[in-house]
Length: 511
Image (cartoon, rainbow, N blue to C red; front, top):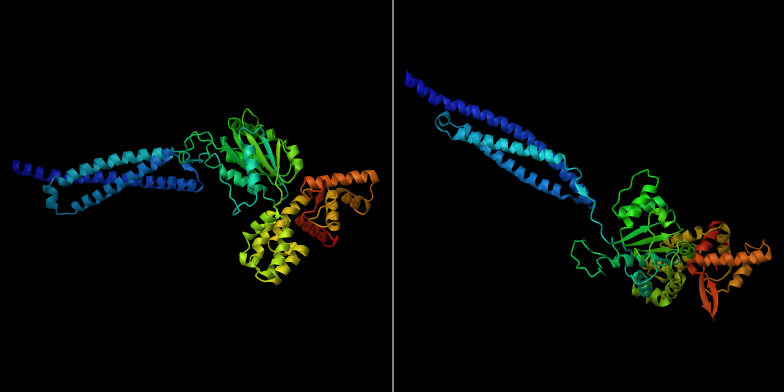
Protein backbone atom coordinates (compact mmCIF):
# COMPACT_ATOMS: atom_id res chain seq x y z
CA UNK A 1 0.00 0.00 0.00
CA UNK A 2 2.81 2.31 0.80
CA UNK A 3 4.28 1.71 -2.71
CA UNK A 4 0.97 2.53 -4.29
CA UNK A 5 0.79 5.69 -2.22
CA UNK A 6 4.31 6.71 -3.16
CA UNK A 7 3.76 5.95 -6.85
CA UNK A 8 0.49 7.81 -6.87
CA UNK A 9 2.19 10.82 -5.19
CA UNK A 10 5.03 10.73 -7.68
CA UNK A 11 2.67 10.65 -10.62
CA UNK A 12 0.17 13.22 -9.39
CA UNK A 13 2.49 15.91 -7.94
CA UNK A 14 3.95 16.86 -11.32
CA UNK A 15 0.48 17.18 -12.75
CA UNK A 16 -0.59 19.53 -9.98
CA UNK A 17 2.65 21.50 -10.35
CA UNK A 18 2.16 21.87 -14.11
CA UNK A 19 -1.42 23.02 -13.65
CA UNK A 20 -0.38 25.51 -10.97
CA UNK A 21 2.55 26.73 -13.06
CA UNK A 22 0.31 27.12 -16.10
CA UNK A 23 -2.13 29.22 -14.09
CA UNK A 24 0.66 31.49 -12.84
CA UNK A 25 2.12 31.94 -16.33
CA UNK A 26 -1.30 32.71 -17.82
CA UNK A 27 -1.92 35.34 -15.13
CA UNK A 28 1.45 36.98 -15.65
CA UNK A 29 1.08 36.84 -19.44
CA UNK A 30 -2.33 38.51 -19.17
CA UNK A 31 -0.92 41.34 -17.04
CA UNK A 32 1.99 41.70 -19.45
CA UNK A 33 -0.45 41.90 -22.35
CA UNK A 34 -2.42 44.71 -20.66
CA UNK A 35 0.71 46.72 -19.86
CA UNK A 36 2.18 46.04 -23.30
CA UNK A 37 -0.93 47.46 -24.99
CA UNK A 38 -0.69 50.56 -22.79
CA UNK A 39 2.96 50.97 -23.79
CA UNK A 40 2.09 50.61 -27.49
CA UNK A 41 -0.61 53.27 -27.17
CA UNK A 42 1.72 55.65 -25.29
CA UNK A 43 4.53 55.11 -27.79
CA UNK A 44 2.13 55.87 -30.66
CA UNK A 45 1.10 59.13 -28.99
CA UNK A 46 4.71 60.19 -28.42
CA UNK A 47 5.75 59.25 -31.98
CA UNK A 48 2.77 61.17 -33.41
CA UNK A 49 3.78 64.26 -31.42
CA UNK A 50 7.35 63.91 -32.68
CA UNK A 51 6.16 63.58 -36.30
CA UNK A 52 3.97 66.70 -35.94
CA UNK A 53 6.88 68.64 -34.42
CA UNK A 54 9.25 67.59 -37.20
CA UNK A 55 6.76 68.80 -39.80
CA UNK A 56 7.15 72.20 -38.15
CA UNK A 57 10.94 71.74 -38.34
CA UNK A 58 11.23 71.35 -34.57
CA UNK A 59 13.95 69.06 -33.23
CA UNK A 60 12.99 65.99 -31.12
CA UNK A 61 14.64 65.95 -27.69
CA UNK A 62 17.44 63.43 -27.27
CA UNK A 63 15.74 61.77 -24.30
CA UNK A 64 12.56 61.33 -26.35
CA UNK A 65 14.44 59.75 -29.26
CA UNK A 66 16.24 57.48 -26.80
CA UNK A 67 12.93 56.46 -25.17
CA UNK A 68 11.38 55.67 -28.55
CA UNK A 69 14.37 53.53 -29.53
CA UNK A 70 14.34 51.62 -26.21
CA UNK A 71 10.59 51.07 -26.27
CA UNK A 72 10.87 49.84 -29.85
CA UNK A 73 13.46 47.29 -28.79
CA UNK A 74 11.33 46.26 -25.79
CA UNK A 75 8.28 45.72 -27.98
CA UNK A 76 10.37 43.38 -30.13
CA UNK A 77 11.20 41.41 -26.96
CA UNK A 78 7.48 41.22 -26.19
CA UNK A 79 6.89 39.82 -29.68
CA UNK A 80 9.53 37.16 -29.06
CA UNK A 81 7.96 36.32 -25.69
CA UNK A 82 4.58 36.00 -27.34
CA UNK A 83 5.92 33.44 -29.81
CA UNK A 84 7.53 31.45 -26.99
CA UNK A 85 4.29 31.56 -24.98
CA UNK A 86 2.25 30.26 -27.91
CA UNK A 87 4.73 27.42 -28.49
CA UNK A 88 4.55 26.48 -24.80
CA UNK A 89 0.76 26.48 -24.87
CA UNK A 90 0.89 24.20 -27.91
CA UNK A 91 3.06 21.76 -25.95
CA UNK A 92 0.44 21.62 -23.21
CA UNK A 93 -2.09 20.39 -25.75
CA UNK A 94 -0.01 17.14 -26.20
CA UNK A 95 -0.70 13.65 -24.68
CA UNK A 96 -1.31 13.61 -20.94
CA UNK A 97 1.39 10.94 -20.55
CA UNK A 98 3.89 13.53 -21.73
CA UNK A 99 2.75 15.98 -19.07
CA UNK A 100 2.98 13.39 -16.37
CA UNK A 101 6.30 11.92 -17.26
CA UNK A 102 8.28 14.93 -18.53
CA UNK A 103 9.48 17.89 -16.48
CA UNK A 104 10.06 20.11 -19.55
CA UNK A 105 6.64 21.83 -19.49
CA UNK A 106 7.00 22.69 -15.82
CA UNK A 107 10.54 23.97 -16.39
CA UNK A 108 9.35 26.01 -19.35
CA UNK A 109 6.50 27.38 -17.24
CA UNK A 110 8.96 28.53 -14.61
CA UNK A 111 11.14 30.21 -17.15
CA UNK A 112 8.22 31.86 -18.95
CA UNK A 113 6.73 33.05 -15.70
CA UNK A 114 9.99 34.55 -14.60
CA UNK A 115 10.46 36.17 -18.03
CA UNK A 116 6.92 37.57 -17.98
CA UNK A 117 7.49 39.11 -14.56
CA UNK A 118 10.73 40.73 -15.71
CA UNK A 119 9.15 42.11 -18.88
CA UNK A 120 6.15 43.34 -16.92
CA UNK A 121 8.42 45.28 -14.58
CA UNK A 122 10.34 46.85 -17.47
CA UNK A 123 7.17 47.77 -19.36
CA UNK A 124 5.79 49.51 -16.27
CA UNK A 125 9.05 51.45 -15.91
CA UNK A 126 8.97 52.58 -19.56
CA UNK A 127 5.34 53.68 -19.23
CA UNK A 128 6.15 55.72 -16.16
CA UNK A 129 9.17 57.25 -17.93
CA UNK A 130 7.08 58.05 -21.01
CA UNK A 131 4.46 59.86 -18.96
CA UNK A 132 7.09 62.26 -17.62
CA UNK A 133 8.80 63.10 -20.93
CA UNK A 134 7.14 66.52 -21.07
CA UNK A 135 7.60 68.34 -24.38
CA UNK A 136 8.81 65.97 -27.05
CA UNK A 137 10.66 68.55 -29.18
CA UNK A 138 12.28 71.95 -29.08
CA UNK A 139 12.51 74.76 -31.63
CA UNK A 140 15.18 74.32 -34.28
CA UNK A 141 18.55 75.88 -33.47
CA UNK A 142 18.78 79.50 -34.49
CA UNK A 143 20.50 79.88 -37.83
CA UNK A 144 22.72 82.92 -38.25
CA UNK A 145 20.80 83.68 -41.44
CA UNK A 146 17.44 82.40 -42.63
CA UNK A 147 17.00 82.21 -46.39
CA UNK A 148 14.41 84.60 -47.81
CA UNK A 149 12.56 83.40 -50.96
CA UNK A 150 13.61 85.21 -54.12
CA UNK A 151 11.12 85.75 -56.93
CA UNK A 152 13.68 87.10 -59.39
CA UNK A 153 15.53 84.87 -61.84
CA UNK A 154 18.57 87.13 -61.82
CA UNK A 155 19.40 90.69 -60.92
CA UNK A 156 20.19 92.96 -63.86
CA UNK A 157 22.17 96.19 -63.75
CA UNK A 158 22.53 96.42 -59.96
CA UNK A 159 26.03 95.18 -59.23
CA UNK A 160 27.33 98.62 -58.26
CA UNK A 161 24.42 99.14 -55.86
CA UNK A 162 24.90 95.69 -54.36
CA UNK A 163 28.58 96.38 -53.82
CA UNK A 164 27.78 99.70 -52.14
CA UNK A 165 25.31 98.07 -49.72
CA UNK A 166 27.76 95.28 -48.90
CA UNK A 167 30.47 97.85 -48.28
CA UNK A 168 28.21 99.67 -45.80
CA UNK A 169 27.67 96.42 -43.91
CA UNK A 170 31.38 95.87 -43.42
CA UNK A 171 32.76 96.21 -39.89
CA UNK A 172 35.11 99.01 -40.92
CA UNK A 173 32.29 101.16 -42.32
CA UNK A 174 31.12 103.68 -39.68
CA UNK A 175 27.48 103.77 -40.84
CA UNK A 176 25.22 101.88 -38.41
CA UNK A 177 21.80 102.69 -39.92
CA UNK A 178 21.51 102.45 -43.70
CA UNK A 179 18.45 103.48 -45.69
CA UNK A 180 17.77 102.01 -49.15
CA UNK A 181 15.29 104.30 -50.89
CA UNK A 182 13.57 104.46 -54.27
CA UNK A 183 10.20 104.35 -56.00
CA UNK A 184 7.88 101.37 -55.68
CA UNK A 185 8.83 98.46 -57.93
CA UNK A 186 12.41 99.62 -58.48
CA UNK A 187 13.88 96.51 -56.82
CA UNK A 188 14.85 97.56 -53.28
CA UNK A 189 13.53 94.36 -51.70
CA UNK A 190 15.20 92.25 -54.38
CA UNK A 191 18.56 93.78 -53.50
CA UNK A 192 18.16 93.07 -49.78
CA UNK A 193 17.01 89.51 -50.47
CA UNK A 194 20.22 89.04 -52.44
CA UNK A 195 22.25 90.58 -49.60
CA UNK A 196 20.54 88.41 -46.97
CA UNK A 197 20.94 85.15 -48.89
CA UNK A 198 24.53 85.93 -49.84
CA UNK A 199 25.40 85.97 -46.12
CA UNK A 200 24.33 82.34 -45.63
CA UNK A 201 27.33 80.19 -44.76
CA UNK A 202 29.81 83.07 -44.75
CA UNK A 203 32.30 83.15 -41.90
CA UNK A 204 34.35 86.31 -41.77
CA UNK A 205 35.66 85.43 -38.32
CA UNK A 206 37.88 82.81 -39.94
CA UNK A 207 36.32 79.92 -38.03
CA UNK A 208 36.08 76.48 -39.61
CA UNK A 209 32.60 75.90 -40.98
CA UNK A 210 31.23 72.49 -40.05
CA UNK A 211 28.18 71.22 -41.87
CA UNK A 212 25.01 71.32 -39.76
CA UNK A 213 26.95 72.85 -36.85
CA UNK A 214 26.41 76.39 -35.62
CA UNK A 215 28.96 76.32 -32.82
CA UNK A 216 31.18 79.40 -32.92
CA UNK A 217 29.92 80.39 -36.35
CA UNK A 218 29.30 84.00 -37.30
CA UNK A 219 28.02 85.46 -40.52
CA UNK A 220 29.78 88.46 -42.02
CA UNK A 221 30.74 89.63 -38.55
CA UNK A 222 27.16 89.28 -37.17
CA UNK A 223 25.93 86.72 -34.67
CA UNK A 224 22.60 86.69 -36.48
CA UNK A 225 20.69 88.38 -39.29
CA UNK A 226 17.03 89.22 -38.63
CA UNK A 227 14.63 89.94 -41.50
CA UNK A 228 11.26 91.64 -40.88
CA UNK A 229 8.72 93.10 -43.31
CA UNK A 230 6.74 96.09 -42.06
CA UNK A 231 4.37 97.29 -44.86
CA UNK A 232 1.83 100.12 -44.61
CA UNK A 233 -0.24 98.54 -41.82
CA UNK A 234 2.78 98.36 -39.53
CA UNK A 235 2.28 98.01 -35.77
CA UNK A 236 4.93 97.89 -33.05
CA UNK A 237 3.40 94.75 -31.54
CA UNK A 238 3.48 92.83 -34.81
CA UNK A 239 7.09 93.83 -35.43
CA UNK A 240 7.98 92.71 -31.90
CA UNK A 241 6.38 89.31 -32.49
CA UNK A 242 8.07 88.86 -35.88
CA UNK A 243 11.49 89.60 -34.42
CA UNK A 244 10.81 87.46 -31.34
CA UNK A 245 9.80 84.52 -33.53
CA UNK A 246 13.02 84.85 -35.54
CA UNK A 247 15.01 84.94 -32.29
CA UNK A 248 13.24 81.88 -30.89
CA UNK A 249 11.59 83.84 -28.08
CA UNK A 250 8.08 83.20 -26.77
CA UNK A 251 6.02 86.27 -26.00
CA UNK A 252 2.87 86.17 -23.83
CA UNK A 253 -0.51 86.89 -25.39
CA UNK A 254 -2.33 90.00 -24.24
CA UNK A 255 0.86 91.67 -23.05
CA UNK A 256 1.02 95.47 -22.87
CA UNK A 257 4.24 95.47 -24.87
CA UNK A 258 6.60 96.35 -22.05
CA UNK A 259 7.67 92.79 -21.25
CA UNK A 260 8.06 92.12 -24.99
CA UNK A 261 10.24 95.19 -25.25
CA UNK A 262 12.43 94.08 -22.35
CA UNK A 263 12.65 90.50 -23.60
CA UNK A 264 13.79 91.58 -27.07
CA UNK A 265 16.14 94.22 -25.75
CA UNK A 266 17.81 91.81 -23.31
CA UNK A 267 18.26 89.16 -26.02
CA UNK A 268 19.52 91.47 -28.78
CA UNK A 269 21.86 93.25 -26.36
CA UNK A 270 23.87 90.03 -26.16
CA UNK A 271 24.21 89.81 -29.95
CA UNK A 272 25.98 91.56 -32.76
CA UNK A 273 23.01 91.65 -35.13
CA UNK A 274 22.07 92.85 -38.59
CA UNK A 275 18.42 93.89 -38.65
CA UNK A 276 16.90 94.09 -42.15
CA UNK A 277 13.60 95.99 -42.21
CA UNK A 278 11.80 95.80 -45.54
CA UNK A 279 9.09 98.19 -46.72
CA UNK A 280 9.22 100.88 -44.03
CA UNK A 281 6.51 103.50 -44.53
CA UNK A 282 6.83 105.57 -41.40
CA UNK A 283 9.40 106.20 -38.70
CA UNK A 284 9.17 104.51 -35.30
CA UNK A 285 11.15 104.34 -32.07
CA UNK A 286 13.58 101.42 -32.20
CA UNK A 287 13.94 101.34 -28.42
CA UNK A 288 10.16 101.17 -28.00
CA UNK A 289 10.18 97.97 -30.06
CA UNK A 290 13.04 96.56 -28.00
CA UNK A 291 15.86 97.04 -30.52
CA UNK A 292 19.15 98.29 -29.04
CA UNK A 293 20.49 101.27 -30.96
CA UNK A 294 23.41 100.17 -33.16
CA UNK A 295 26.73 101.69 -32.20
CA UNK A 296 30.45 101.05 -32.49
CA UNK A 297 30.48 99.12 -29.21
CA UNK A 298 27.86 96.50 -30.09
CA UNK A 299 28.87 96.57 -33.81
CA UNK A 300 25.25 95.90 -34.84
CA UNK A 301 23.65 97.46 -37.93
CA UNK A 302 20.22 98.18 -39.32
CA UNK A 303 19.39 98.41 -43.01
CA UNK A 304 15.90 99.24 -44.26
CA UNK A 305 14.05 99.88 -47.50
CA UNK A 306 11.61 102.72 -47.98
CA UNK A 307 9.84 104.72 -50.66
CA UNK A 308 10.43 107.97 -48.82
CA UNK A 309 13.46 110.14 -48.22
CA UNK A 310 11.55 111.58 -45.25
CA UNK A 311 11.62 108.14 -43.61
CA UNK A 312 15.38 107.97 -44.12
CA UNK A 313 15.72 111.25 -42.25
CA UNK A 314 13.27 110.36 -39.50
CA UNK A 315 14.95 106.95 -38.94
CA UNK A 316 18.34 108.70 -38.59
CA UNK A 317 19.88 106.86 -41.52
CA UNK A 318 23.59 107.64 -41.55
CA UNK A 319 23.90 106.43 -45.13
CA UNK A 320 21.30 106.68 -47.90
CA UNK A 321 21.54 104.55 -51.00
CA UNK A 322 19.10 105.53 -53.71
CA UNK A 323 17.99 102.85 -56.17
CA UNK A 324 17.15 104.43 -59.52
CA UNK A 325 15.35 102.89 -62.51
CA UNK A 326 17.48 100.91 -64.95
CA UNK A 327 19.10 102.55 -67.95
CA UNK A 328 17.99 101.67 -71.49
CA UNK A 329 20.58 98.91 -71.99
CA UNK A 330 19.75 97.11 -68.74
CA UNK A 331 16.02 97.62 -69.32
CA UNK A 332 16.25 95.69 -72.57
CA UNK A 333 18.42 93.05 -70.93
CA UNK A 334 15.79 92.47 -68.25
CA UNK A 335 12.89 92.58 -70.74
CA UNK A 336 14.61 89.96 -72.89
CA UNK A 337 14.74 87.56 -69.94
CA UNK A 338 10.93 87.36 -70.16
CA UNK A 339 10.15 87.80 -73.88
CA UNK A 340 11.38 85.26 -76.48
CA UNK A 341 14.12 86.62 -78.72
CA UNK A 342 12.16 85.50 -81.78
CA UNK A 343 9.34 87.94 -81.00
CA UNK A 344 11.65 90.87 -80.34
CA UNK A 345 13.46 90.25 -83.65
CA UNK A 346 10.19 90.36 -85.61
CA UNK A 347 10.23 93.66 -87.60
CA UNK A 348 6.44 94.03 -87.29
CA UNK A 349 6.69 93.88 -83.49
CA UNK A 350 9.90 95.84 -82.88
CA UNK A 351 8.18 99.26 -82.97
CA UNK A 352 5.68 98.15 -80.34
CA UNK A 353 8.31 96.50 -78.15
CA UNK A 354 10.35 99.71 -78.20
CA UNK A 355 7.29 101.64 -77.03
CA UNK A 356 6.55 99.13 -74.23
CA UNK A 357 10.12 99.19 -72.92
CA UNK A 358 10.16 103.01 -73.01
CA UNK A 359 6.81 103.11 -71.17
CA UNK A 360 8.31 100.96 -68.41
CA UNK A 361 10.84 103.73 -67.79
CA UNK A 362 13.45 101.31 -66.45
CA UNK A 363 11.14 100.12 -63.65
CA UNK A 364 12.03 96.45 -63.06
CA UNK A 365 8.55 95.52 -61.79
CA UNK A 366 6.97 96.89 -64.98
CA UNK A 367 9.57 95.28 -67.24
CA UNK A 368 9.08 91.89 -65.60
CA UNK A 369 5.27 91.99 -65.42
CA UNK A 370 4.78 93.34 -68.94
CA UNK A 371 7.49 91.03 -70.25
CA UNK A 372 5.56 88.02 -68.97
CA UNK A 373 2.33 89.35 -70.48
CA UNK A 374 3.78 90.22 -73.88
CA UNK A 375 5.65 86.91 -74.17
CA UNK A 376 2.42 85.21 -75.27
CA UNK A 377 1.43 87.87 -77.83
CA UNK A 378 2.78 86.65 -81.14
CA UNK A 379 1.26 89.17 -83.56
CA UNK A 380 1.78 92.88 -84.16
CA UNK A 381 -1.96 93.45 -83.71
CA UNK A 382 -1.94 92.06 -80.19
CA UNK A 383 1.07 94.18 -79.29
CA UNK A 384 -0.69 97.29 -80.68
CA UNK A 385 -3.78 96.51 -78.59
CA UNK A 386 -1.59 96.08 -75.50
CA UNK A 387 -0.12 99.53 -76.12
CA UNK A 388 -3.59 101.06 -76.08
CA UNK A 389 -4.48 99.26 -72.87
CA UNK A 390 -1.28 100.37 -71.15
CA UNK A 391 -1.97 103.99 -72.05
CA UNK A 392 -5.76 104.20 -71.69
CA UNK A 393 -6.88 101.34 -69.45
CA UNK A 394 -3.81 99.91 -67.68
CA UNK A 395 -5.67 97.64 -65.26
CA UNK A 396 -7.28 95.92 -68.25
CA UNK A 397 -3.97 94.34 -69.20
CA UNK A 398 -2.70 91.37 -67.26
CA UNK A 399 0.44 92.35 -65.37
CA UNK A 400 -0.25 96.07 -65.34
CA UNK A 401 -2.62 95.76 -62.40
CA UNK A 402 0.32 94.71 -60.21
CA UNK A 403 2.37 97.71 -61.36
CA UNK A 404 -0.53 100.13 -60.86
CA UNK A 405 -1.26 98.73 -57.40
CA UNK A 406 2.35 99.21 -56.31
CA UNK A 407 2.52 102.81 -57.52
CA UNK A 408 -0.91 103.72 -56.18
CA UNK A 409 0.27 102.68 -52.72
CA UNK A 410 2.77 105.52 -52.95
CA UNK A 411 0.08 107.87 -54.22
CA UNK A 412 -2.25 106.96 -51.35
CA UNK A 413 0.61 107.32 -48.88
CA UNK A 414 1.15 111.02 -49.66
CA UNK A 415 0.77 113.28 -46.65
CA UNK A 416 -2.18 115.33 -47.90
CA UNK A 417 -4.96 115.26 -50.45
CA UNK A 418 -3.66 118.58 -51.80
CA UNK A 419 -0.36 116.91 -52.71
CA UNK A 420 -2.26 114.12 -54.45
CA UNK A 421 -4.37 116.57 -56.44
CA UNK A 422 -1.24 118.50 -57.44
CA UNK A 423 0.32 115.29 -58.78
CA UNK A 424 -2.81 114.55 -60.81
CA UNK A 425 -2.66 118.07 -62.25
CA UNK A 426 1.05 117.86 -63.11
CA UNK A 427 0.72 114.47 -64.85
CA UNK A 428 -2.20 115.72 -66.94
CA UNK A 429 -0.47 118.90 -68.11
CA UNK A 430 3.17 117.98 -68.66
CA UNK A 431 4.68 115.27 -70.88
CA UNK A 432 5.88 112.11 -69.18
CA UNK A 433 9.51 111.08 -69.20
CA UNK A 434 10.82 114.51 -70.21
CA UNK A 435 12.79 117.02 -68.15
CA UNK A 436 10.76 119.91 -66.73
CA UNK A 437 12.02 123.05 -65.00
CA UNK A 438 10.56 123.24 -61.49
CA UNK A 439 9.47 126.84 -62.02
CA UNK A 440 7.19 125.70 -64.86
CA UNK A 441 5.50 123.23 -62.54
CA UNK A 442 5.00 125.88 -59.87
CA UNK A 443 3.55 128.37 -62.37
CA UNK A 444 1.11 125.75 -63.63
CA UNK A 445 0.02 124.84 -60.09
CA UNK A 446 -0.45 128.50 -59.09
CA UNK A 447 -2.00 130.00 -62.22
CA UNK A 448 -4.41 127.30 -63.34
CA UNK A 449 -3.96 124.46 -60.93
CA UNK A 450 -4.96 123.45 -57.40
CA UNK A 451 -3.06 126.40 -55.83
CA UNK A 452 -4.68 129.16 -57.90
CA UNK A 453 -6.89 130.42 -55.04
CA UNK A 454 -3.96 130.96 -52.68
CA UNK A 455 -2.16 134.26 -52.11
CA UNK A 456 0.62 134.53 -54.71
CA UNK A 457 3.63 134.34 -52.40
CA UNK A 458 2.12 131.61 -50.26
CA UNK A 459 0.99 129.70 -53.35
CA UNK A 460 4.46 129.71 -54.88
CA UNK A 461 6.05 128.51 -51.64
CA UNK A 462 3.38 125.86 -51.30
CA UNK A 463 4.07 124.79 -54.88
CA UNK A 464 7.78 124.30 -54.27
CA UNK A 465 6.98 122.38 -51.08
CA UNK A 466 4.61 120.08 -52.96
CA UNK A 467 7.21 119.39 -55.64
CA UNK A 468 9.79 118.71 -52.94
CA UNK A 469 7.45 116.24 -51.25
CA UNK A 470 6.72 114.45 -54.55
CA UNK A 471 10.44 114.16 -55.23
CA UNK A 472 11.07 112.87 -51.69
CA UNK A 473 8.34 110.24 -52.18
CA UNK A 474 9.81 109.29 -55.59
CA UNK A 475 6.66 110.22 -57.49
CA UNK A 476 8.71 112.83 -59.37
CA UNK A 477 12.26 112.15 -60.53
CA UNK A 478 15.16 114.56 -60.45
CA UNK A 479 17.46 115.03 -63.41
CA UNK A 480 20.15 117.43 -64.57
CA UNK A 481 20.02 119.21 -67.93
CA UNK A 482 22.90 121.51 -68.91
CA UNK A 483 23.89 121.79 -65.27
CA UNK A 484 20.37 122.73 -64.19
CA UNK A 485 18.39 120.63 -61.73
CA UNK A 486 15.06 119.66 -63.22
CA UNK A 487 12.36 117.04 -62.64
CA UNK A 488 10.46 114.57 -64.78
CA UNK A 489 7.39 112.39 -64.53
CA UNK A 490 8.14 108.68 -64.65
CA UNK A 491 6.03 107.14 -67.46
CA UNK A 492 4.47 104.54 -65.17
CA UNK A 493 3.69 107.13 -62.48
CA UNK A 494 2.05 109.26 -65.19
CA UNK A 495 -0.08 106.33 -66.38
CA UNK A 496 -1.08 105.53 -62.79
CA UNK A 497 -2.01 109.16 -62.04
CA UNK A 498 -4.11 109.52 -65.19
CA UNK A 499 -5.89 106.27 -64.34
CA UNK A 500 -6.65 107.57 -60.83
CA UNK A 501 -7.93 110.85 -62.28
CA UNK A 502 -10.29 108.98 -64.60
CA UNK A 503 -11.54 106.87 -61.69
CA UNK A 504 -12.23 110.07 -59.72
CA UNK A 505 -14.22 111.45 -62.62
CA UNK A 506 -11.71 114.16 -63.46
CA UNK A 507 -11.35 112.70 -66.99
CA UNK A 508 -7.91 114.16 -67.61
CA UNK A 509 -6.75 113.33 -71.14
CA UNK A 510 -3.69 111.08 -71.66
CA UNK A 511 -0.49 112.99 -72.28
